[in-house]
Structures are given as C-alpha cells and as structure tokens.
Length: 444
Image (cartoon, rainbow, N blue to C red):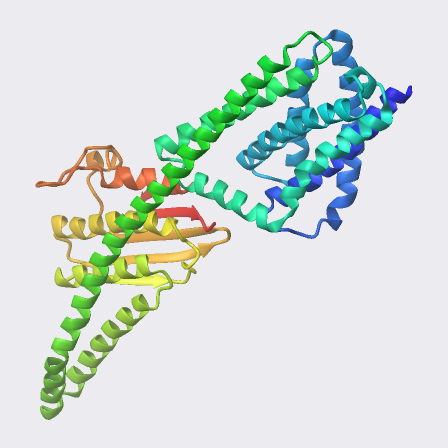
C-alpha cells in the first residue's frame, strides 16, 4: 500500500468518524450520551474507510468518479439506518445537508492551500498529510455548527415546521425545489473539484455557483414567508374556533348560573315533600353534570377543551348524553391540536346528526382519548350504523345524505387531516351495531 492510498484511507476513516458523530447530534431528538455508540462508530468508520479508498481507486481507474458520490451516499444512508436507527426523511435531509457543505468546504480548503502554499491540486492529492488535513478541515467545518446547541435548535425547529406544514402544496413544492437545487449545486462543486486538472474557466464556474446560491436563497426566503403566512392563517382560524367554543363555554356557564335558583327550588320542593328517592336521583344527575363540566375545563389543551365543552352543550340541547373520558396528556400537541380539533368537531357533529336522523332510542355518544405507546388514540362511538350503501361511500368527497348546506366533505377532510398528521382514521361497526370512528396519530 503506497503512501497516497494510506493517506486516503486515514482521511476517509477520520472523516467517517466525525460524519457519524455529527449525524448522531443532528438527527437525535436531544443530545444523548454518545459513549455507547463509540465502538460502533469506529468499527463502521474503518469499514467505510476501506470501502471509500477501494472504490476511489476503482472508479478512478475506470474514469467514472461521478458514480463514486452516488455509491458513497447510498453507503452513508445504510450506515445511518443501521447505527442510529434514524427515520428515512430525516436521514435524507441530513445527507443532502452534509454532502452539500462537505463539497463546499472541500473546494474552499483546496483553493486556500493552493493560494497559501502555492500548490497544485495534484500536489495536494498526492500528499498523504495534506489529504488528511483536507478531510479533517472539511469534517470539522460541518460538525462545529451542528454541535452547538444554539445553532442546532433553529435548524431542527425549522425542519419540524416544514414537516408540520408539508401537506400545503406551495410549501411542499418549494422544499423539493430547494433540495433539488442543493443536490445540483453539490454535484457541480463535486464535479469541478474532481476536474481541477482540466481546463475549466474559474470565472464561468463561479458565476454558475453564485446563480445557484442566489436561487437557493430566494427559495429559502419564499419558504420562510410561506410558512410564516401559513402559521398566521392557522393561528387566525384557530383563534376564531377557540373564540366560538369559549363563547359557547361562557353561555353554558351563564346558563348554569341562571338555572342555579331553579335547582335550589327543585331540591327544596323534593325535600319538603319528603321524596328522598327523587331527591337522591336529582342530586346524582346534577352532580354528574357538574363533574363533566369540570373535567372538560381541566383538559390541558384549550382548543380541545373548549370544543368538547361546546359539544356537550350542543348534545344536551338535543337530549343526547355526551360522555368523555380523557387519560392522555394533550398539552404537547401544539400546532397539531388545531387539526385534531377539526377532526373531532366533524366526527362528533356527524354522530349527533346520525342519532337525530335515525331516531335512535339510545341517545349517547362516547369519546375516549388515551395514549397507546408512542401514539395518541381517539375513539368516537355512537349507537346505530348507516346502511351498507352509505357506509361504502362515507369517505367519498362530495357525498352526503343530508339536506341543506352540507358539502359532503367533512369525513374526507378528516381523512386528509389524519394523513397530514401521519396518522390513520378507521371506521368500524361492532356486533352490537355501534358505530366507531378511531383516530391514531403520533404523539410527537
């Protein structure tokens, strides 16, 4: 093994160690203790180092260095999945980020060495020590911003915002455009770096790079503005819904205060008539109503709390007993609470209308919200079931059996919202002819 190959091998191993360490910091939900990963990182780094060196020699002999970057990205993806158990899209975003800035820092250090030491690219590539220095500088130039918490938080937060609003068509299109532009720029830089010995016009190349960077910056600006406007729109609509639900809540409280005197009079009448059984039944019912209201008020999410209280009031006005059982923590839903509120609103409204339409003898609706491991499970159950021909078209957009201004989009929108939340909306009928709508979404 000559010194050039040895230098390339050492450079590849060192680069891979730093690469995997930075991936652990960047892709984890929080900065963890990396000590348990050290043996794996070093073993895979050595394997990757030998692989990178051998493939470099192989593709160099075939004069197909363009294929080397593709195979290296594929191997990097496999390593990340095997070692860190990362998610597919998180891994892809990191790979694009790393390879782009890796190529950029590589060309910067090469030009710097050529300018300061008055060397050519052949001098650098054939010098093992300089090759190792290039790899170290390239890797550390990437890991430094990733390692600093103050830099990592905005990056991860921004990526989470993109994930949350990804179903909005414009945001999705701009994000894909940015990723493709980054990949194109990486390919240009890599191609130029590997062909510096050829007759390439540096000014023309610089203009192309600047145009690409300008397009990326404009796309990022559009993405920031679009996400900001989408957030404002979501907040505005959420505020309207919350205002309506809180208005319903206040009306319910006022109604209970107004009825307080009536309750006292009824209790007094039952007591005066020595109707202890009637008094006991009345007090139990009154206590149950108060407990339900208090439970809703204690829900740790204002959107869902206000919605459920308004539905209790609506159900009571139609003689329907709406029973709610919540054992899950809802305070961490954040922006997703708005979509979950819209889903619950549609499904509970459908349950109320189904009971009215079918004139059920049993008038009740049960709502269960609980945690199932890493998922949030929501079930809405009501008596009765729709006819088979209706059941088959429940989620069909525009289909409705109701008259008036109903658009027939309610359940279809619920299905889309569940998909946006990376969850599922299921429909089933129990042997006792109960209709069940089940929603399962990730907690985070």
